[in-house]
Image 1 (tube, rainbow, N blue to C red):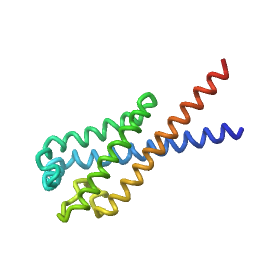
Image 2 (image 1 turned 90 degrees about the horizontal axis):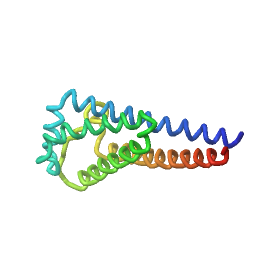
Image 3 (image 1 turned 60 degrees about the horizontal axis):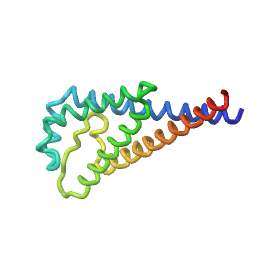
Image 4 (image 1 turned 90 degrees about the vertical axis):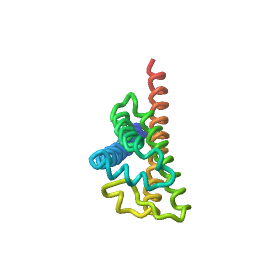
Length: 154
């Protein structure tokens, strides 16, 4: 009984993590695609992204939507969690680099996230990096316990 409750709690936690990432990436992608021109201009203001702003204006939101779709399907969920974790690490590293520079660069995030300062955004991203890592660990443990319980049923 204890094992069942623990497993159920892990499944619920994993579902919540995936839902939060799906919500974040779908929202962020929609905002970027709805005002792609503004997103492109804002990315162009970053000295790190100027040369790639036009292509990234399409690549980032489409990647976010792809990852959200991967998280929504059980078969691709683990790959989606790794992709979520990787993307959030990249966004976090970018923010750290921006915070190290002395330039005032506007956030190209859009929507609610745009109202955050860089430090708040860093904390937000670190939270999602931790969620991504937690999701990967939960998914892996659930898969292992499922393989073990299947092996014992034979």
